[in-house]
Length: 137
Picture (cartoon, helix red, strand yellow):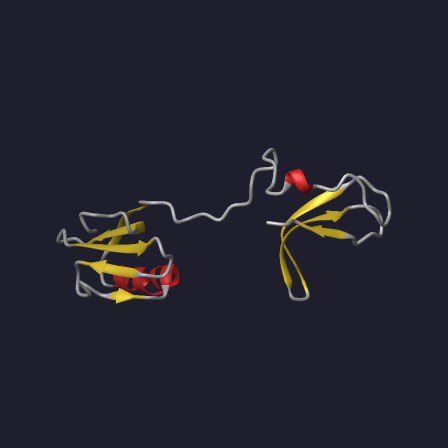
């Protein structure tokens, strides 16, 4: 593993009976892989976690290395939805009443896609109603 690991998401460390060590780093972009040590020192790959779990770890364990530890280093960037208790973007634009069915029950859609239009919207949750109002940003 490198001295500066801001770019590393997860690291696997393997050791053989002679004490030789291999470190495999998965970078935070989710697809860059780098091997340090062992017969493939400096090897780089762009196939992510799959190449580590399906090719590299089995290859090194078959060559006499044992997985001694693996651990997350930095969390990858997260694109999580807001928690239920948080008000969604455009909450102040929530309609008071549906103009089609008069329902006051609405659901927030963070990325509604219809035809050529896409974006956040409030959708009527009334029975058999499909009315929606796009949020003006």
